[in-house]
Image (tube, rainbow, N blue to C red; front, side, top):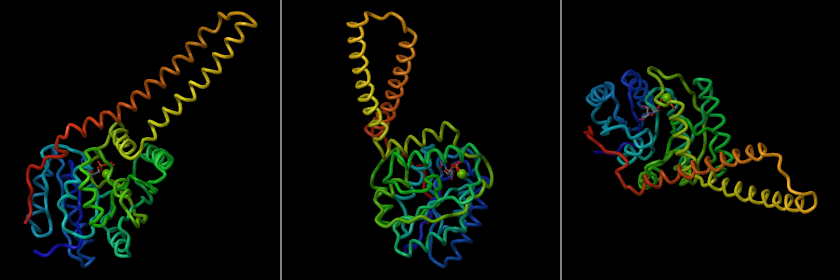
Length: 311
Ligand code: UDP
Ligand code: MG
């Protein structure tokens, strides 16, 4: 069997109502490029009828469509990783199943890849999301740019991206369980670029991420690629020790010259509670790292495949 030139990898979680339209628009866009391709759809343990819908898509084009069925929900990035481990193409494109990333933009990415880039990142133009998602995203993009200046990305939220096979093989070989694929790719990229792509509302269904889910997801990005939060606490520790030292010095001198002071108990409480808050926050951040280390060292498989449908 000849190898396809393009591999498209799509994670699917409860997207039964989107798959038919995704198939129609995606194959139309890919057929128009006149390049050979395969589409790998990874079912991340959907609890709706996605599995049956995927099977009918496979039966329609068994030579071009491959389905990986997970044995449970392992998360969007693990679903993409499973696809990465099995791609056959030279150019690998990732895409969401809910049609928020219009498949019609794929040719733009292919042009950039063929111009010699090994990673094509994207930023969303005219985003269609809830205002709170936009706010969280803007804040997070700023914070990330500040904490991880090496990750040069305008927008890390859009999953419509293209990678060369070399980068994809490197990513698949890391074996990380908590990761963030666009950031991981930039770690290995030699000649990355960024293009703007359109962004649409979800075709059907609702986002799989709650506010809490998004926070967890962002922690994966931060802890996976930076020690900055831990270093912040080292600096806070150093500053607080220094200030307290000066304060102790001041109080001792005051005691000798003016005498002992008894007032100010509540000020003291306020300062104590504030410091206690910082200590607890620090403990939580250390916990975020320790938890992830624990996940990695337990060495459970990062995903379990139940079934593969391919030619
Ligand atoms: N997804 C997944 N596993 C999950 C959550 C999401 O494979 O546990 C897929 C989902 O089917 C979609 C993509 O990841 O293709 C992005 O998810 P979603 O649209 O819910 O996120 P949002 O666009 O709101 O960030
Ligand atoms: Mg979406």
